[in-house]
Amino acid sequence: MNEQVKELLYQMLETEMGGAQVYTTALQCVINKELKEEWTEYLEQTKHHIEVVRELFGKFGLDPKQQTPGRQVVHHLGEGLVQAMQMAKKSGKGEAAELVACECVVLAETKDHLNWELLSKCAEKAKGDEKKALTAACEEVEDEEDEHIYHSKGWCRELWIQSLGMPAVLPPPEEEKDVKTAIGAARAEKAREDML
Image 1 (cartoon, rainbow, N blue to C red):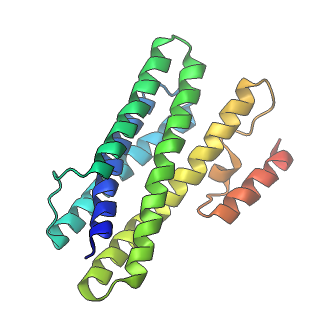
Image 2: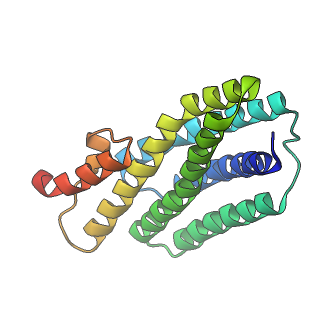
């Protein structure tokens, strides 16, 4: 396995671990009951994703405690998202804290989604046991990661629209249409006007 694929795996583990912290903190900020249910589910899935990545570490003989400069940056970014939500929660404005939490989830899921997309590309080029292990991990996780990013973006957009005093579609169309692709997300956003 080449060094940059190892680096990706180290960053993936850190991203998933940080994601669990992001969701744990976001759940302290959420007001919308349906969004709370969604994030609770995503937190459980993220904890499972940590285990999937740890299994890859075992298969490839990687040390899950090893730090790399990239992993340290990912850790720092995750801590920053958690601190941002804590700061927003301390402001005492529940709706504002929920919006900050939504934005932080979207930011965390953007990196997470990219990681899995890149690992999928690595799986396509890999050979033998490495290919099998990477492909199996991606197949197990990618649909959930797609849902996390597209649904979270929809929630963030609609809660912002609501906060601006305009009619919002809640839950968002991405949720109603069970979107798992960029094309599906674009269609759902376009269709939101018909849902008002």
